[in-house]
Length: 411
Ligand code: PMP
Image 1 (cartoon, helix red, strand yellow):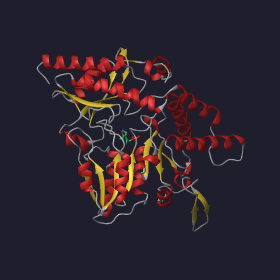
Image 2 (image 1 turned 180 degrees about the vertical axis):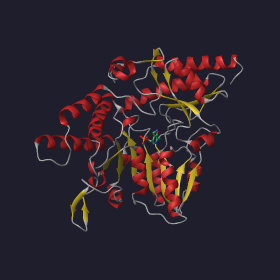
Image 3 (image 1 turned 30 degrees about the horizontal axis):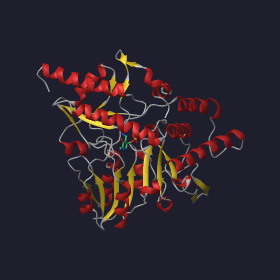
Image 4 (image 1 turned 45 degrees about the horizontal axis):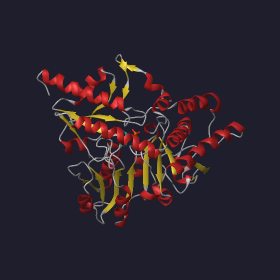
């Protein structure tokens, strides 16, 4: 990786102030910032390359189509997919997971079971809840250990021949827990279940190898990996994608249309109906190139180091509770905490006044909040462009917050 100052110079967002202080951006789990190569690519696309893809018989259209399809190959290489045809562009993780649930790759009957975990983001929970309600299937939850990791014994206990789907996050957006996806997929496949992985908090933060994972579907968003908003990916095993039906019908995804009948393009193009987010795809390609230049393993090591420092610093404060596993290996860059009995929003407001951006609330994981017995948490999430000084500043700010509220008889 380049020096931290060189890296930070690539992210114009980071040079701002907030409430009169230099901005400390620690909300990277919500969305990451975009480096110049991504921003310049968006400008370049709209100023020089703005034509529709897969149509138009002129040179520019062919060039932009080649660029668009080139990014599909880049994504395939990034996640070690066996073919670019296993890459479906979506709006983001949410859309990808909805397609996995409602695309018909799995058909459920009453009493079939869908197994999710208590730590799932609503995106990897609500679609399964709805699918269960529609089909009469039963939604079951794998519990967590007191350390905030997936309870493997409970997983094995709940997995049975009735289990048709196992839906799990590769990394939690609250606890920072990294789940053993390959072992989960192998075990779930022994009972013939479809394995769906929410990789929103893994992609760009750790090596993702879909062949090593061996799942059926993997979903992620471009905006959480330095790319633009409105673009994401559903990776599916080719045979599984062949079983899926499109969720949108119309232009572009067809092969031939007569008055009474339509034939469709092949996988994955049959899923990309209508004009796609071409700028988003091109920006995503530049984001992938940037991440690869920095080195994903290097990024992971740096983020784990920063998160470990932050978690340890916060844990050392008497009133602070930090959630999630302690060990660096099983963690990503997300650190959720509470300060005494203070409301998470109050803490975030005090931090905001000092220029620090963190998120407070349930983080789209209300089942997990229930499990933790709290209405919400504060969440700081690092990226490789954060500095040790920023992390230390947050620890000091939290310490001051704690002291301030204590002095005023609160918390
Ligand atoms: N899953 C996880 C674990 C997430 O963190 C998020 C985003 N917070 C999502 C899914 C949803 O991603 P998107 O909003 O980009 O669809």
